[in-house]
Image 1 (cartoon, one colour):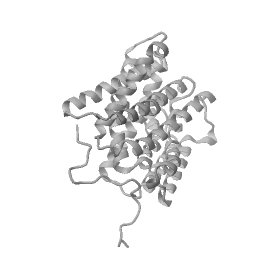
Image 2 (tube, rainbow, N blue to C red; image 1 turned 135 degrees about the vertical axis):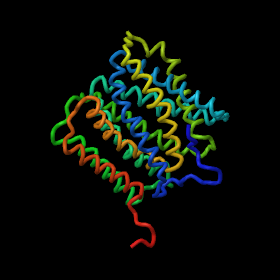
Image 3 (tube, one colour; image 1 turned 45 degrees about the horizontal axis):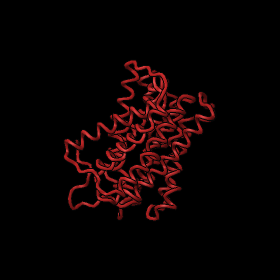
Image 4 (tube, rainbow, N blue to C red; image 1 turned 120 degrees about the vertical axis):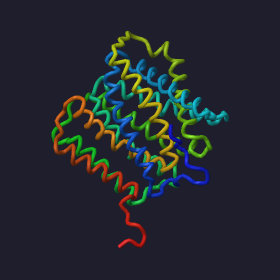
Length: 315
């Protein structure tokens, strides 16, 4: 497991700085793949489980994976009570609530539509950061990049062709889940990124406490019939191990290194991952607007991160 913390003596990128390292971009791409595939796994998982049962399995698996990494690396978990209070709140707002909302929504709407709505997270994060994180107030490049990314998502969605397969209740659930993610990005940056704990320790604490919180409620909310064919089991394990455990480890590192707003732009790439999975796994045909939208999204992310700026002195 690579060390995601910066080397001794090297300060992480300040929030709001326009440039990011190649390592951060690689982690951003990996996170997009992990979370982009999660909607497909959710859709398969709810074939045999209720939303609460699926989320409980996801959290328990994710917590187990992260705990194993902590043991191997001999990492210290947070000890201060206030940190665990913050982690407990994030466990509800950043994990239990959005996980349940997306799973419940995908019973009523398509997984691809869930990924599209999730792409609104950077815009919501930006609005919240303006109020809660003064150091991350958007400059012209970041605001332009976020708008371009949103336009790219719309191009992939192709609203002029109509969006089918989504009930209103499911779509409202997707929006509410995206709001939860926006809040959690900003909350993490403000209250946990400067505590001195490693991304691994914070991710393990958050996912573990979220699993415990939902486990305590399981006798009341995780009832109902259960069907566990191999595809359902595999989906739950993939959601927990990759879409929750490893993904949240990467997420904490990105928020620490490049800031909440830039880190949240990963959600612009999620619809692109969903389209690629549809083509490779389900045999979907790729339309022209998928390619154009993908290019616009990538360009928007580059603008938001300031990677298109010329170096000083360049001609």
